[in-house]
Image 1 (tube, one colour):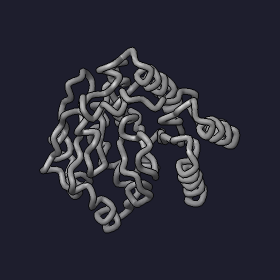
Image 2 (cartoon, helix red, strand yellow):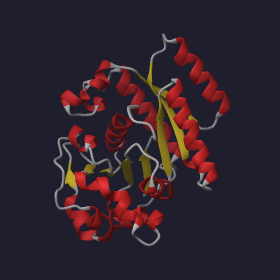
Image 3 (cartoon, helix red, strand yellow):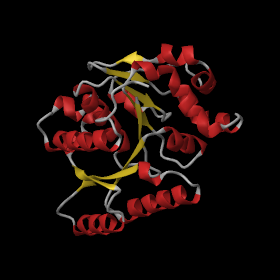
Length: 256
């Protein structure tokens, strides 16, 4: 089993859209996938038409294996289940700060379902926090969407610095350009600069700025399902193919 986190310390970069489409693409490839929505806003759950689980509090998430398993819901897609978020998740950081070894608690909690899935995909809230550090230590790969603009570039550089300062494994960081507009000179220049500075960190696949992705909130479904031949869907499947290799899923032959 592999744990893949979709994370950004900046909001509005297409993180949840990436998580939703990546989860669907992985499931469509035949892998058993659990999408775990850690963001109290519950956007991933909303896209998959799954209601929040009122029973799953922060305490039950980290301490109650049975309650976590009971809260998992089937999606409308084969091989894909959802662990929905709820507003209680906003207290994750406070709760974790009161626990022993808080940065390892997430990985221990997810062990309750590791035998049932080949991939656990985490849709993470946009913050640098105790929960974020737990995600960084639990994940086999951390996928970071980056819009090719100055502020998004700055937050990605801050993330790299945070990993270096806290002795976190930078080789787990895999960035991808999101909401790319090829007609914009700024986007082209920023992508060239970042790829030059971090040649091994960025995926080749890029997600275009597309109305089809924006419509996901109306359709409440992955674009890879509703418009499989669109440019956006093809881009997400290309991201999926690269993530499979980078996360070692192409070599993973078991669920342990």
